[in-house]
Image (tube, rainbow, N blue to C red):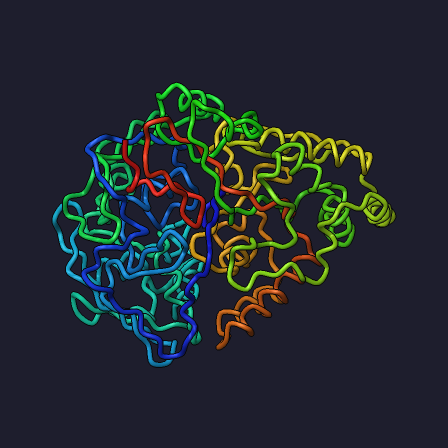
Length: 542
């Protein structure tokens, strides 16, 4: 559930059958998707943004920290290039009823040589779920029995009832209801383990984490770079084919692109809007494109003046219909983005554009003006101003918000203007604390291949990335029903029903699906995007 990610999903294998067993494949050494044809000792440099928080998996829900954490840690499962899954630390994940799951672990160690045990996972999940620890990923433990108790404002228990350590290599997970696809999410960073040493001082640990993944952190120079080196203790499916990855912090994507052109940066995960029209013909770089699962969207704070109550509901729809998504994607992004017709993205299993009420996402100036006039009759807008907030250190953000402001102003005749943040972490801090006072950018890169990952974390009541504080019990119930569905067909229909509620309430504005666009310096090899639109860093060589 990270802000801003993507896809190449050709056919995701969902865990949908009752009694399904997810078992280890021979050796756990990976497959052709996860290994390149050659390896080098060369260190790869890649663009990033400054992580918002210390590098603790349970605290991280943005890409600056998330892409690093995914290389420092290994989960029970891992996702292949196309979004399908294979076991990583788990030897098996089994259930007879989809309610209680038994996890057995392989022999595995952290980068400091200490063993990864069942307790390493159970303690980490309990830490992440406990409300007093205020971890950003706490929402992801909601299926586990006892989650509600540890989420109380003043909890009387500190561990979830549904997690039980059987022995060093075995633990069980009891859910609140049967969920056949529960293991699908276990490759997400919220479910990574933590070593015992982390709990003495979690903040200090996050500055120098001890992971169990393909790399370990060599140094973190804040606002400059994060240097990762191969982890000699790692023996999983994502073995490094290079001598390390150094993530270089950029606040200006144009500067990063210039460095790729000059050979001073190896990999850029997103092309700046200034180069979108030309990068595929630029001989000084290797252009990278891939179908995208990133949803470009914006959220309304639930208490944003003028957008609350009955009048506010009308105005949210009016703003949506005042935006010409076709024009924005064509003129600003040259066909690398597609107008959105739902709150998820086309590569997800069960995706459909036949969502009741989704005509509200289509440009209709007359209807927008009519809805705004109806709102005016209930509560006059007065001299208020609609601000649209974004960080400017990401590709296309400034240009899109500028254009959106103009479209709203021209169609509705109100004062609309951008509110800029220089860095992503600064922007997230204000979002997290409801200080933007604006309609704000809320791009979403999925963490596991399911429509539920777009809906629950952003719009579920109390969810970690629900920075607009939207809450609708009917929507929550639809998601709960989807989670407990016994067939894919029923689950997908439940997602349609949940999205129909969002179309009526319009707590956010789906804008476009973003294709993966990147660039690599000449001489860099094996650069490929995964199903999320993230470079497969461990395979890159030069």
